[in-house]
Image 1 (cartoon, rainbow, N blue to C red):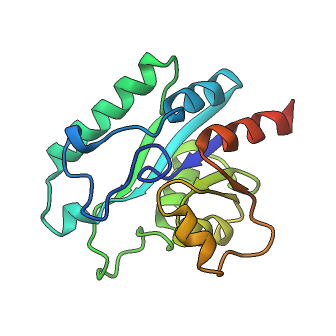
Image 2: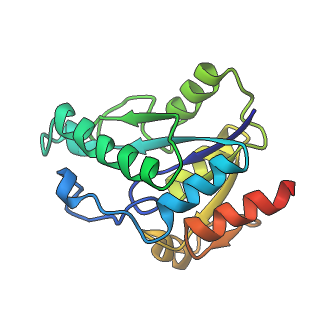
Length: 180
């Protein structure tokens, strides 16, 4: 199975330091929903792994988060694509959960649900924690400059050899070219 794991905020949609708290605030980065459709058309299943500490902080509830994800699914569908599943950590950043990236719980859940070894699976993120999580499970991290990506790149802690792309469109094109 060809699988790609995407972070949500900053990769698929514009991020906000005040959190994305409503469907109205969730707006896709230009080209991102089309990039997901292109991955699907190339035979990839696409899943999202996202920290959503706004739930744990009480900034929004699960029904609001579900409404945000419904908007995301609808827009991706309108572009001719699909997201097979969304895996999320709803815990606040100070919790001791196993699922908040850079911990590996979300990725291990993806591996179990899809019966796949994550070795070599592309994982696209905009933050160092996304990259660290991917490396910890043997996935292939990719950084995009959107969202927190430029801050991550300028922070100087990006592991050597992690490819960097302008956005999800360019990352998806690189993934598709790799197997063509």
